[in-house]
Length: 295
Image (cartoon, rainbow, N blue to C red; front, side, top):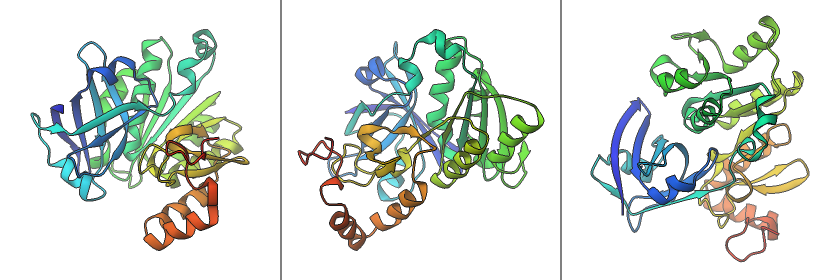
């Protein structure tokens, strides 16, 4: 059992929890995720690691209730426990394994949409800990849905954007990117964008025009988290990839977002899953199940 040490509501539709998981905290890196399970019959829920404390053995997660399992999860309080809490899973962010001196030479822009602020935060925090100054954009539909504002301010140069103009920049995160580059003359070597699929699609469309290499996280399309279900199958360039085992981070300019979003909708129905399995054959699953989909 994995004890919940802290549980709080961050906004109208997002929750934060600190979970006692020393083995995960000891080895996890920015960009990786865990799989949580509330009880023996509960659904497996993949969630990107928002923060970690190696000394105290704590993992922080942030999530939104989108179904029965996450709704049940939102009712848990400090003192309750998860039945399973597995990780770290997935590949860490590329810069973690790069030569630190080379990373320091680059100018990074981080863009987070909604609950995407959760996986962006540990990356920005890592940069701050290594003495690298970065710009950060956090977007939300309205002021009440902005999360981790103070945490982001402590580790990066933060700009808030709200769709309705109730706080910060009035408009989408793409508007902020254009302002930074075209009006303020900022130059970036890498953009990291994490949030809803539609947001990442339009950020990538803009950064491609601006010639800024862009990394995205496809955590939003993961279901099982081990490659066994085939839900997160995506085409990146000319290759079939699986967000949970090959990612969750990929070159955003190579991701076929339209196909991925259409596939997401189909996967939600039993008939849709059957059709996808028929169409995709041996590439439907991504490994971990002995199907060979990871080869």
